[in-house]
Image 1 (cartoon, rainbow, N blue to C red):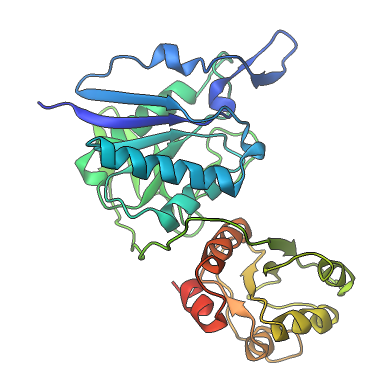
Image 2 (cartoon, rainbow, N blue to C red; image 1 turned 90 degrees about the vertical axis):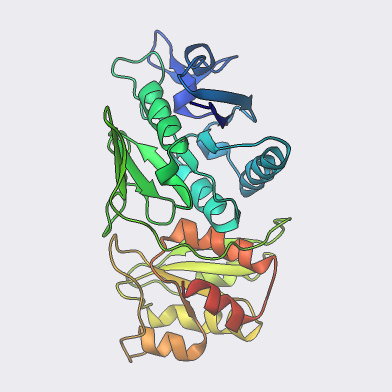
Length: 323
C-alpha cells in the first residue's frame, strides 16, 4: 500500500501545553506531541510548527496564514490530507475560516485537547491520532473542513465549543456529528452540503460582534460610530428581534451602507423575519438587516470579514449569508 502524505500543522493550544507542579498549564519551549508522533503505518507525516500560540492569541490574520500555507504546500507536494492542532477556544473560528476559503478537495481536519499533554486522562494524543486517521480516509474527501474530537467528526460550519472543560465539549447543535472514529476505522453517516469558497487575500475590515439583551438601547451602538467600522454582527433575541431602543443608531449604519448581520443568541434554530412589531424580525428585514442562515455570532463575524474583502454590495452580502 502506498503511503499517504499528510501535512501536520501545529499552531499551539492546550494540546501542545504541559501542566507544572502548581497546576498551571502553559506553553513550553517545545511542542511535546512532536516526540510522540513519529511513525504511523502507511502515513508519511510532513510536520511543521507554524506558530505556538494559545488559542485566545489566534487572530484572523493567523487563520489566513494557515490557509496560505496549506495551499502553498499542496501545490509543491502531493498531499492526501491536512491535520491542524489548535487550541479549543477559537478552534471553531479557524475551522470555519478555512472551510469558507479553501478550495481543496483533500481532507482538512482540526483537532485539539481539553487536557494538557502530561495531565491524567490527557486527550490530545488520542485526538491527534483520530484526526490523522480521518485525514487519511478516502471517505473524508470533499467533505469540507472537519473537526475531530472525542471520537466524533463534526463539520466546521455546525460545530461549537459547548463546555469550558469537558472533553466532550465540541458539539453540533441541531445536527450532531456526521461521523465517528473508533478502532474499526472512520465511519461517516452524513455528507454536508458544500458551498463555493469565498476568495480572500487580505483581511483589513473591522467587523464587531455584540449581543442583544432585554432593555438594550443604542448608547453602545453610538460608541461604535467613532470607530472605523465596516460591518456589525448582532446576536439578536429569539428568531431575530431587537429592543426598539437600539434601532436609531443601527438605522444610521444601514443608511451609510454598513452591513448588519443578525444571528440568534439561542443555542438552536435560525433567525427569520417573522414578527412585525417595532424591532421584530419582519421590521428589521424591511429596514435592510441581513439574516444569517444558522451561523453563530463568532462564525458570522468571520464570514462578514471575508465577504467584505470582495464586495460592499448589501444584496451580494445577503446572498452570501443565505447559504
